[in-house]
Length: 541
Image (cartoon, rainbow, N blue to C red; front, side, top):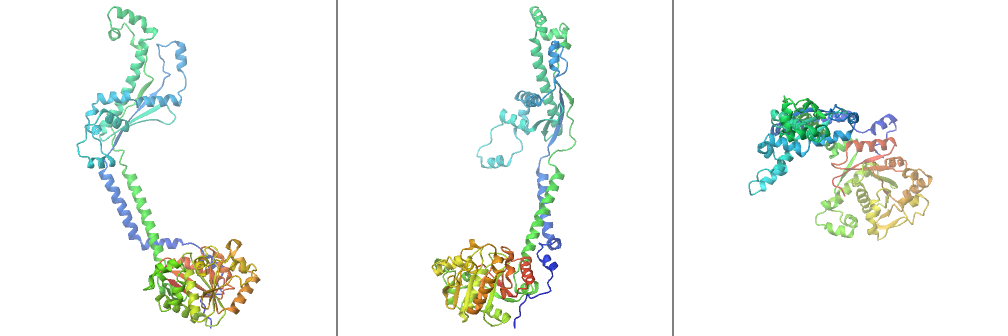
């Protein structure tokens, strides 16, 4: 008489372990093979964008010169003690000071004026940024000519000075759209820096005691310092040299430093593959969602009991606002309008179920789903109402401690929320105090009770008290419908299969994945639980 899909005593441990594994590498290969056009399209789009960026980007050339900073060079104009004091190691602060001198306004002004950069379109009218471009579109007047401050800022943004490793070498780099200009301005910056340094030291030397007397005597004769140096009256070799010297002048770069074509193409290729792969996996997962009756029967291998259509979308002429206002979750509507489409679907499910398990009384039916939120609680309520309408004395039990939807939704209908419920009955409370008989004709309800007292879900069922409870319930009721937790929320719910006579699986169309449903079914089979069949929930309740 019982035709339960799911009694498979030969299910071994190895097949159970396989069922619990996540999607395999073979699934990934299949996903990529089925969606190779999507992946290829993403790669093509990414590469096209990369090529457009490369084609529209202005090439940037970098000229680099190197300076060796060494203040320990002998300086004849100093006394011996001064020369000894000069023999010290250079610390980071000194080099940072020289870097700031190279980037100083004095050096930049010297280069800008010497090379007339304030008249160079590359500095007076540089390539606009997105913000400046949008601002120019909104402007009503022509922009004023670039000020010296703007030219100086543009110059500073192209200049880069850095220390090479832990050495005393400073690298001066300059960016320009013209390779010749990049090298020329890098060399100009180093020349201006050394020139400023030499000038500063000469001024200091002129004021020193070593040169003060000769210069004063020559000045009395009407001879300038420059004329004295040219005539040899002052030895130029005794003048101080700069602490820095150029060890490598900037050469004309042979190729642009930006845009970096290989880097952009590589990044675009990686981004395209990643985006395409993610889209392929999403499409594959969507395809693997159960949608049709044929998928339930062929892919899952369980009986199809019918489809459950959500109340609010399938009840013509009914005011959903009234249902929401009463917060009765459609209890009265389901019970009082059996001719509605959802009532017809519930009768179909009830009839299909009884064809599978028979019409005998005293059956405990567990309603579960692969994941939470797939509408199993409303299916359980609808099925209980349908059995009650058919004259079956029915008890609906909320046994979902993690998400007691039935207890919360039906509390308003019962105008109370009992503190005694399923959990307390299993712990030894009186059965009569936990059952609410006024839900509908022939239908009683047992809420979850105080779920915080629950220690372990499966342990509560694995007791003599639980066996005795369900034995009594089978004697008192024709149908006992138990709303169980979702398999993903409480995986050990399948361990109570010895108490449940048959399971009804709720699958949400377009959402429940094939792999999730198979894990649930395999676990129930492993526990030798009887699976009456599956209900396809076409819309979440």
